[in-house]
Image 1 (cartoon, rainbow, N blue to C red):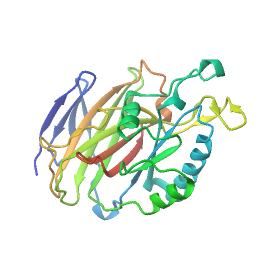
Image 2: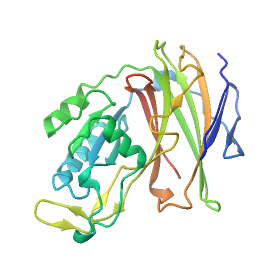
Image 3: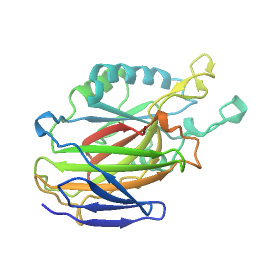
Image 4: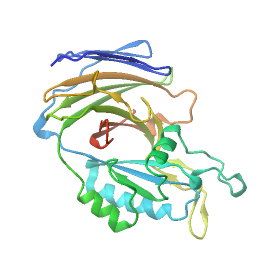
Length: 278
């Protein structure tokens, strides 16, 4: 089924095209990009789960939360995708105690407010319900998360070292009918950021922060994947996006793009995919 969309924003623009044959042309920051997606085998697609962790560098209980998340990621492998959102009072810089770095982002702040300003460390699974607290609650919620399979998302990232610009190409294939409007949302996260972290009895100045939310690439919740957001089984959508790295301290080798397909009304995550920038 053919779909053609065009959206333009102040910091990035993307074009959707309806070609089923490769290569696919996308317009990204006024630059054409050719990418060819591998053929999708629906029998090999599986549902992935998003784990939003709300955290902060002056939250003394947050290292325990990070440890539990790491165990869950080891247990579930790539079926679990994490985004650590630094937001709230415990994420504010505190230079008097050596916490000079600011991990916060506009998208993270908006999510934090929209989901009721959860305490740190708190988790929200697939953007459904309120924040969850405690190891057993986190484990049980991941175990019992909805794994209905509605779509597949493919990502091809192209990073230009000279211009320090990332070009993101996405293909979303609808595998089952869904009767509500949906949106495609892209996030940038980064691993291995060494900055201070407060513990209950000390400050670790060499703490490694992982899965850190860096940016909402196409807004806080993305945009409709079709003119009215409605999709049907076997629809395919191709989008290209552009993101500048040159004025940030993001390290592309440590960064990932996370793509989410969301129910536009409830904002429930229907599918998630994660791919390295380079």
